[in-house]
Amino acid sequence: QQQVRQSPQSLTVWEGETTILNCSYEDSTFDYFPWYRQFPGKSPALLIAISLVSNKKEDGRFTIFFNKREKKLSLHITDSQPGDSATYFCAAPNYGGSGNKLIFGTGTLLSVKP
Amino acid sequence: GPKVLQIPSHQIIDMGQMVTLNCDPVSNHLYFYWYKQILGQQMEFLVNFYNGKVMEKSKLFKDQFSVERPDGSYFTLKIQPTALEDSAVYFCASRSQGAPQNTLYFGAGTRLSVL
Picture: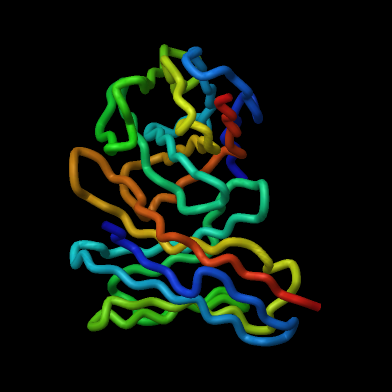
């Protein structure tokens, strides 16, 4: 059972375009959504995050839009650059069990062509 | 930024042998994690560890897996015996507090190849 879903699985855009990556979830207890970016052969690193109290979070060219009613998020990358080419993971904390852990989505592989 | 170190970066091992993956978490971090990633797919939670104890483990954390962090040494993931399906990249991660708003820092990963 996939708790955090992402679409599309892969995406190719041209330099300068706006990239939109989608994420959805089912569990109503999820209240914080970090996005991690992973370059090929590297470790994932936190890119931007949003909590339940916000509808939008912006950091430079990266913006998260959050639709709580539909349990959907999207990450927008404006003026996409070849250096943005990476896999993007949406994640959520799962408070089940006796510890806090992040549940990651399946990821979206982004390729930005010059 | 804070660094999580993982040793080795790549390990090739014959099926049935034991392997130990080592992780040096960010100093003063208290919560440690292992994740498994196959061929650039999603990161799958294996186990988290706090105050010398396993807090939670997933179904992927088979009986052949164990973790420990003796005082002052690495946080380790041991697999004994290894199986072909254990081939993956294993990421160690740490955070300072248990709250999810605290950033989870990942190491560069250990690529395990079981032959």
